[in-house]
Amino acid sequence: MGTIDIICTIFIILVAIFGLKKGLVMSIIGIFGWIIGIIISLALGPSVSNLLQDLIKISSDIANIIGYIIVFVVVLAILGILCSLIHKSIQFLHLGTIDHLLGFIFGCIKALIIIFVVVFIVRLMPLSKQMENYINSSYIVSFSEKFVNAIIDRTNLKQPIDKMKHKLPLNKDYDSVNTETESIKER
Image 1 (tube, rainbow, N blue to C red):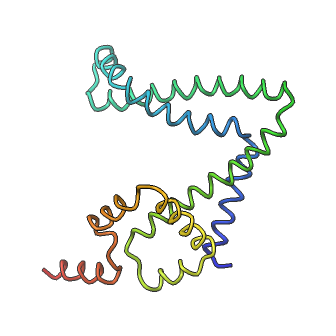
Image 2 (cartoon, rainbow, N blue to C red):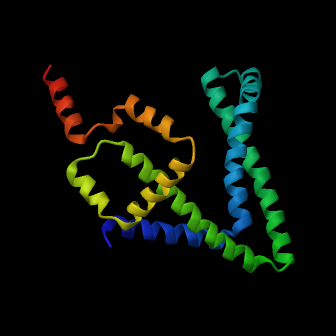
């Protein structure tokens, strides 16, 4: 087991323990809470910004930032209260143990998904031969690549990903990017 595998394993364990503590319901509401908070702040942020500009007479840039933050925090606070009520209901129904065990499993799955996404992004980047060999020696990276490739092969994502790879300079070899950078510096 290499360093990358050890780091990934520790990450999976930490996220799983965090999921165990929060429970499944709280973990899911937490994820959706952030998504809902972002969506609602994008929708209502400009209105709050305009209101702030009228009331306080501040610049539009500052009002925009404050408007989005206010809406986001209010949404998270409301969802926090909702989470508290749901958590009390789960405890009242004596489903806490099941909720926490499912939270542990959810944490493991969430950590693996994060690792899969990171591996996918890293594979788009230019890497030196040494770094490529280092990454290829990881069991978890190998498993992640097989899993991600299986998903890509079974969906319609292969063509868009290939197009993206060719449009971005990220798919070049690290050594060729390094050479190009040096030649640009010389000019």
